[in-house]
Image (tube, rainbow, N blue to C red; front, side, top):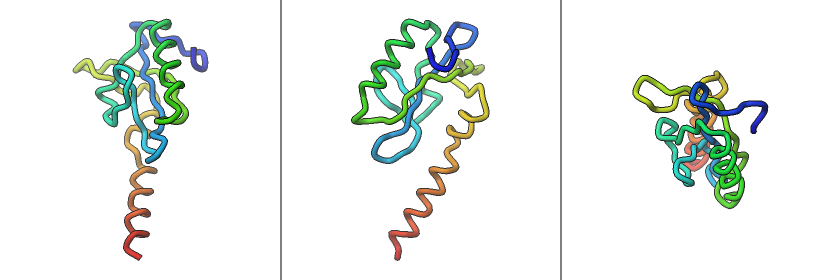
Length: 108
């Protein structure tokens, strides 16, 4: 499994990647890509997560760099980031700066 992380009921994981065309962060749910990380599928079983990751990797026409990352189950049962890096990616500040720059460039 990814970087020594093995999903379990105590430490579930989600699969994330970047949208190939737009570059923004996406998360996997039921084999497809969604923009809302709170709706991502939580993986608690290593074998199921590995199969889903292989599916994600095979979708190279849609996403780049898919990987499994540790998550937490929030009070509402939805995924929450377990580490700063994923919280940062979830908030998308670099993507927002890109959108702003793109909008400014289109007005030139």
